[in-house]
Length: 300
Image 1: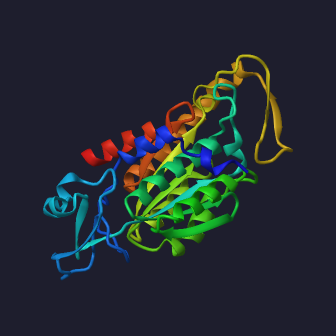
Image 2: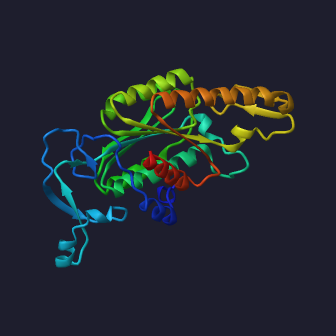
Image 3: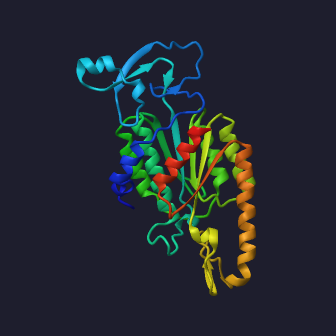
């Protein structure tokens, strides 16, 4: 078990606090927040104030109230409601890979840090966020909640996640569809090593709910450029009985061909289904990855 206090550094918290997520489609929720309600005929009149938090839009501040109280408050309206986000974190064996370029930082550790940053972002906006961890089946599930103390529960759950088992992305995502519900945002944080067709069908089901789906695909650089130059023994991280000694010189061309086919099929399927595919490598700052994605998302 990792120390949950180390999942997001003070510096990363400051960076994440400067980010903002706005729902692209209308949301259904219980609490008042930053996002438009899907319910027609709802009053757009002022409802209540809430304290200003870093990252809120300055234009939402009630400056008259600030003049009276010397404190910053945000004006909220009846038509606004909270967003629900669910973070699906892959803890299958393939996510153990750390290589030698990022000593001590596996793909899973990187995925957990991504999830921790997203949890911090959404709770900072008073939005509801939950976490599910899985390999061949669902291992843990914390439903979305928006109370401030919920962040601690999410961080502890992420820190407890341990890699093991083979990958079965599609069945797990299918099983979670009922829990996730409708009109929310779902983040899949995984290397995506599964049958592309079945994975895409499960993600399409989430999209049709409708939900916004973001696939943060985590790569180790070794998987992309295959840097091996001498005979190397490869052992499956999901099945220890599967191992093979490979001559990289003869193997590289076929590996890269298969990799390109996998990535192309996945990218085309995500584009067709309007699923945001965000490739990232363990050598990149996970906060920079989120910031870049949010900037690109806001420009569309």
